[in-house]
Amino acid sequence: MKTKILQILRQSGDYVSGQELCDSLGVSRTAVWKAIKQLREKGYEIEAVQNRGYRLAAVPDVLSQQEIESLIRTKWLGHEVFYYEEIDSTNTEAKRKAEEGAPHGTLVVADMQKAGRGRRGRSWSSPHNQGIFFTILLRPEIEPANAPMLTLVKAIAVARGISKITGLKAQIKWPNDVVINGKKVVGILTEMSAQIDYVNHIVVGTGINVHQTSFPEELADKATSIDLELKNAGKTGTVSRAQLLEEILEQFEECYETYIRTQDLSGLIEEYNHTLVNIGRRVKVLDPLGEFEGRALGINKHGSLLVEREDGEVTEVSSGEVSVRGIYGYV
Image (cartoon, rainbow, N blue to C red; front, side):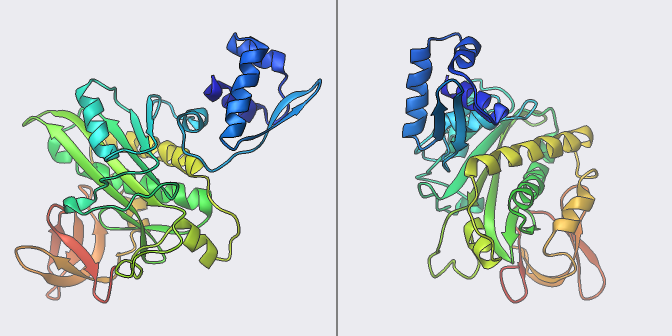
């Protein structure tokens, strides 16, 4: 009921009478009053004026089941939401939900992860009230070999969402890190369960640094947060994590549908390369089979990075066990 009340107050933007809420929800005035009281306790500023009703005056920066569900405007993504104050990992939970039969588009969100992970098993710091940690469960009818491209699809959507909500220039460091001013603000981890020629499910997890004001010394030169970058840009205020999440969901739904029509990145390649922070730069390719340097030319329709070597040969670099770094630093 609290979700529905938030939706009605948001859509109205003005006062909504208690009777209207009762009629819409099919409950008593007492039940509405109790729900309003609970929302106020969560930090929502809801004005009550006699003979006018209730108005949503201000919204706290909370990630809650009600807040997320009341904001969802997507066609199919996130229509089933599982929210946790604390969890081991949203990817791990999404895989559990997948095994239990959760549908395509299921969203798992946590305020804090105790065992957040990045690529190659690296840990991802996930403190309370600081970031957005979420995973999307997908059941696409695609070839398993095409699944890794979804990581790049997600990167485009996240960069779009951050840029739209904050006005900051979010870019992509191939294949799946989103950076602002050359520092990492987002990590993405895609995991798949599949047969030889059939995908059971795919989970695409994302961690976004939002409110962090500092980082450990070993990360300070390559990690940042949205709040830090807003401050550096001279912008006041802060970001609503729930609103940013909703915007990213909308952008991902659109990007995903573009991808699924061709099962490659042909419809997104131009935007990805335009957003790619590495493009045109000299990079170092850290390949277990042998490191080399060259100039990044952008990606092809399969998501491989094209790198021009010193002799003019162009090598297709696929993610897997390969990393790409700037010659003099992270990007």
